[in-house]
Image 1: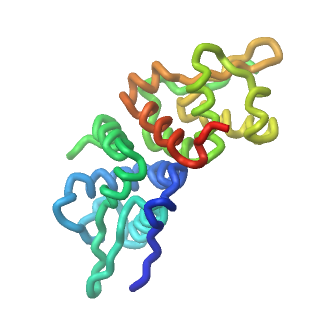
Image 2 (image 1 turned 60 degrees about the vertical axis):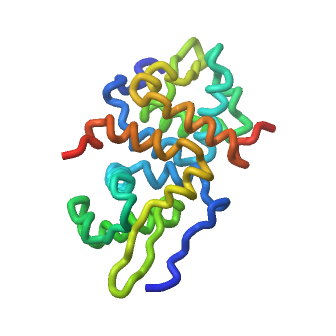
Image 3 (image 1 turned 120 degrees about the vertical axis):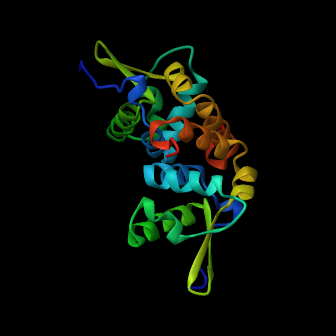
Length: 110
Length: 110
């Protein structure tokens, strides 16, 4: 469970970020992470968005694009948004995307 | 050549927009359109980005996602960014994306 690859800040590519977010479920995962930035989250907190298998796939896509960090801790994986890295690399983009998502029907909080 | 489908404003979906822009070529096409908003452009002005066949595919993706309008005029197709529609649907997003693209190595003007 160790050694998951995360791109360095300067390896984060805009088109990869957008491709990773070009999916309702991954947008919802990122919006949820943004609402809970005070604490890392675990996979089990996202089960409303899909099965563990589906979530693993989505987390891998988001991690490889540079959007999230996935850190093994014992048998769990702690998931967090790479907010500082993204804000440094693409100033304003994450906030803009999250605001647009929140304003869309798919992004309305339950 | 008539009757190309364009989604209405309220049918434009954020994840579709991001998926369409999750590609370097389509990002570059949109950035070029944004720099030339005073006039509609034609396919032949984009040949630096790919063959006519490849461009047709990219324009279709962008049109179906609601990013561009493609209007037949005689034997040509006039292509323009749906700036007003996008700004209404997702305030600030297009400017944010274009700024991030312009600041990235892939988006540097020649």
